Image (cartoon, rainbow, N blue to C red; front, side, top):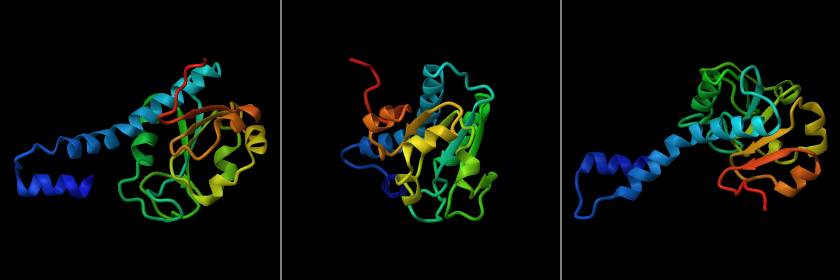
Length: 171
């Protein structure tokens, strides 16, 4: 929506108000706030608070399997989690330089984590063994921002799964 919004801002009004363009941009800007709220929800479900919780944010790059961090939601998500008292750790296997401190060691990011947030679906993240992942975590909460994991497989592995846009009410 950035390019479309630029066109609206640059070239002015249309006979039809392009609200869907503006609203889609607003939704994208709101997503880090929503993700931070989902992390808190998952931690609460596991009996933990956000204060002091280690949260591994997987993916700094905007696109999978790249090092391009332009428009990444990871930085605002990181900042929001810090405001909630959490201790976020950013990980990305492709990015080498970023404004916020991060690690390229996946084990360092996930070991002892109270929650993991999948932001960028790098191939390294999609092939993780869920039981091994749970064993390394202190609190097994996974917030899947890309709906890359199967909820029932996560739950079989003992992981509390929250997928963006997925129903969370138990039947």
